[in-house]
Image (cartoon, rainbow, N blue to C red; front, side):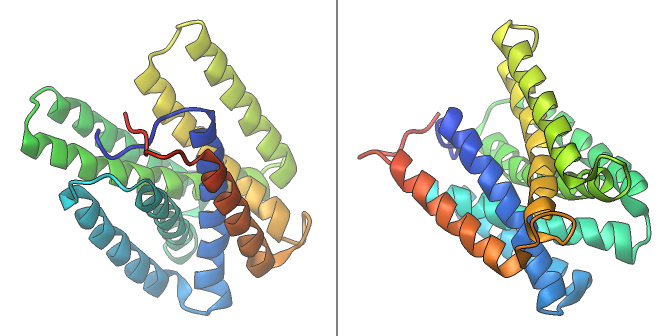
Length: 238
């Protein structure tokens, strides 16, 4: 896909920061601002979809816009997850199963469409890519909340477990036991709940209790620093 930055170590660092930021800002919008999960979801998903169309029909790649879309998708995913688990009362287990099923259907659709390359197919794949990001973010919150709140691991233990799974995935890629495409989506699936559990640990009373506002500010500053350090005269794309 043409609108993705160069995938390297910094890419994954930015992805972890972005997913954590999305988790915290999503909680701030729905809870601290009092919009609720339904209104928050409608506003955020509408904005996200509009931004996707802008990205698809923009010929020139903008790396910063890509990351803004990632963060926006994570904010929207956080609200959708809470809507599914809390408002629809599915809970973290059934909510996670529902979301991961939708995610797998999207990935299957991407693979089927990619077999017939064309300009239209490329646009469909990009649209589905962003919905896979949104869905994986939703799964990150549902599964992250499950690990943080519904298991003895808690936020800190859940984060450690997920990091261990990520390391295993990296080793499988290193020794060529899985493809790069499979690793990418495995990493995305694992990183999103890392953002959720780590965000819960930083912001909530069970962890460091910095709150949503101060945690959001810290993460945005951290993201800006890493992003700007990584910038080169020309954006690199795949």
